[in-house]
Image (cartoon, rainbow over all chains, first blue to last red):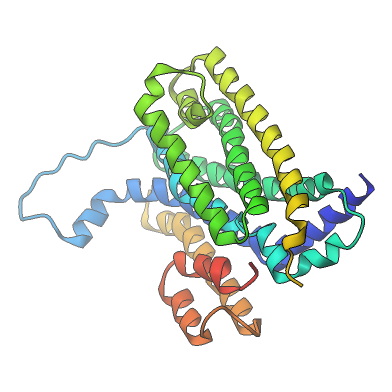
Length: 261
Length: 64
């Protein structure tokens, strides 16, 4: 594990140099702020875009603060996850392609430490971004719409984090297995869509499913979700993450030979 | 809420967008070999809000 610290440092420096440490949080904060702001200014926006005929009466119900925070979560589910997948699609595949990997692979390298170092840095940056995004969204929701108990928000963020980690691990494993970043992103997107589709079509039959974590997390805002199913889903997620972890380290060792010099 | 507090409240959105744009532009200028013509990326970054800088960081930097 002595390598781990050094690999971590390398990974950290790389994330600073390719600006990921700045732009990923920036996007999540923007997503978090825009949702409450757009909802607050919706009447003015409609008026300014001028689509309404003279004398039209439009009753726009004011959304509750909980609804706004759920909308923020929806934004993270679509745009946010896409951004994370695109940002980390090339972590391992790109290294093999650009030749950085040769510098690493010629040394005696523990591939689990290698995979872990990438995972830890990517997870730290994406979780920090998601949290910052939620907190800024929360601040603006309070400013524009009213109070939500912070403990509810924290519960939601905490459980949603497991989902973020799952997506991240899928991307990293795909990046280790496939020849380039584009393919890895395509595979991760396909899996993401398929999982949600399967859960949408057949999900009524089971309550314990990792795909349901975002829903359960959102339920914390308005009440209590079904706790046994939630913990079951979290348990399955952790197991999947560990399995993908083993798979990722194994496949990155196996793909060692595919490195371009 | 009166006008000034509103404007102050929305200032962060503007600042973050500008910061993203500036980061992307500085990197583009220093980048010796971007993935595609430099002027095209410049237009993308300046004209398309938020998405432009992201696209540049993800596919324009040729680090994959």
